[in-house]
Every structure is written in structure tokens, then in C-alpha cells.
Length: 283
Image 1 (spheres, rainbow, N blue to C red):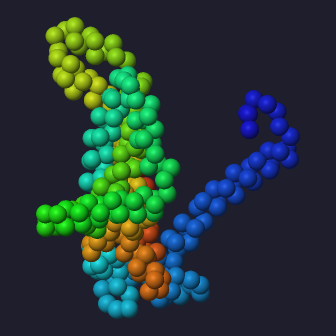
Image 2 (image 1 turned 90 degrees about the vertical axis):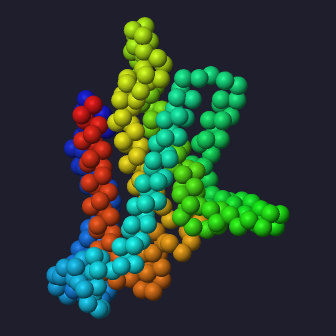
């Protein structure tokens, strides 16, 4: 709707109703998850049995809370480790890719750019299966020929990190490239004229300019890694991250414990998003 064009009252009413219904559609499932995280019941459903903190702080069966459920805490730690590793790799490669595609022109640049974007259009489960088949084939071939067991190519944390990195690095590249395209290169040229080396100019001028985008790319990469399920499912080993651990719990039957975990994830994601926004506003 264009504000400067006069609209009839029925149209404005319909538009407002659409906006309200849209946001209710988005918020209502999250609200339901939040409410049942405090339900004093073994099941996350009606009737409401009363308010309780036990699904967060309970230390005795059958209501063991999140902060006393060691498998869940271990899974959160595993997800945080994977997310941090993937984010660091994605930002480092994203900065390099941004300079490569923004600053340089070379033969095959367009093809290489398309290949970089390809993981974004491949379904996550297909990507995971492809990586698993490739890595297992290489590991088996090395074992058959040299009797070396390459554990890093077997399902486990290393393969999960590499699998998530394969498509998250693309997103980090796009975020950082968008910032780099707005950079005024005459600032670097001025530094070069004053005697700075090209590396010094990039380190002292360009990288600080890219810092908000790098922080944003890190946060986005971390959140995408933390919530990834399809690719991770195909590559996970004995150390299951949180999404896989929650999936295994759901197969046994849902409890408000999973609602409590979901609420903590929503709060954590919101805090990271607010930190990213606050950092970018400082720019």
C-alpha cells in the first residue's frame, strides 16, 4: 500500500486485518511453545495444570529441567562448538571471496560465482548425502590402498562442520560482499599515496569498514548452523548437536522439556540479533 495514495476505509480495514493476521500466524506457534514450557504437566497440551519452573530447574524425575538434563546440555555445547567453528570459517572465507568477486575480474569468474551459489539451491538432505557418500568413498579408498583410517572423513563433528560450512560460507560471502561494494576505494588509494602498503591499507581501513558486515555474517552463520537439521542428520556421529538430540527425544514422546529448550533458543537467538543490530548502529 502506497501511503500517498488515498485509500477507501474498507481497503484500509482489510489491509490492517491482513497485517494483524499475518503477524499472529507467525507469533502464535511461538506463544504456544512458550506457554506450555511452564505447564505443570507431563504433556505439552491442554488442560492447563498450573504454573511451574520445573521444566527449567527441576532436578528430580519425572520433571527434570533443562539445566539438570545433561544430555541436552551436552547437545547445546556441541551445537555451540559447531556453530562457532562454522562461523569463523565462513567469515574468513567470506571476506576472501568478497575481495575476489568484488575487486578482481578474471576468466571464469561468472562460472565460479554460480558454483559458489549452488549449495543454496540444493536441498540440505541431498547436500548431506552427497558429502557423506563422497567422504566415505575417499576414506574407504585410502583404507583399501594404504590401510589408513581417515576418521575425519567418517560421520562426526568434523564432517558436520565441513558440511554446514559448504553452504553457510556462501551466505557469509553475500553479506560481506554487499558491504564491500559500497566501500569507497579512494580511501585505500589515499593511504597508498601516504606510504602505506596495500596490506596495511586493507587492514587499517577496509577491514574496519567491513566489521559490521563481518559481525552480522558471524551471527547469521552461527544461528543457521545451530538450527540446521537436514544436512547435520546425514553427517552426525556419536556427538549429537541439539537439533538431532531434540529429534531423538520427539521420537520417544514430546514433553514440556522440549518447549523449555525451544524457549531458551528463542531468547538466545533474539539476544544475538539485538547484539548484531546494536553493533551495526554504532557504524
